[in-house]
Length: 245
Image (tube, rainbow, N blue to C red):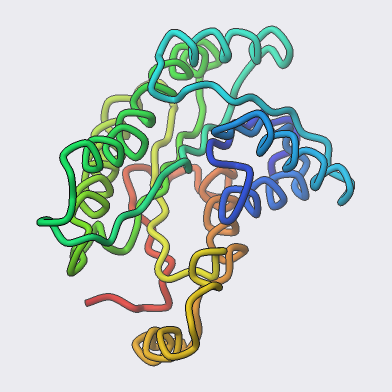
């Protein structure tokens, strides 16, 4: 589905990002992963190599535009073009507002929102030159109805939806599609570590009767990245087992 395509996946060293790397590699894409630190990037590269997947990796500061721009130029030198960008890097929050420091809120917005702006801005000129491309952002089901605490996280994901819909309109004349995937509760490391008494009520609230797997989300990214979704842009695709409030 992605043969001949070059894809960058931020937050590609673990969880949904790493599973998306696998899905893209299975479909013959060249994949470059961005991680937060050299050791996590190298660990992911080794893990993928053990599975038979060859990828490249970088660890730029996603809040440093000059550093990202330099990294993108190096990728272009190596691969000549960038066809797909998956903005997946992000952090969550669950503290009440009284317990949340302003710097905590800023940290969430920096990675979940500003990083999307920085990486997208760096990649878009090359997509325009190549007469097309796909930008995919990781949203969340909380971008639809919020959450009881940790206001910074849903605020950032509402912003992700706004970026997605606005860039879709701006970039459509250049044949660049922009969509987002909004996962529900997914079996990442953080969720897997929760005790059974917390997991059981979550499952009961989901009409499909199970928590999402990382591959469920990766498959949504794969579809939206492929030519099968060539007439879809500006969409926020919920992948949550109908667990909407």
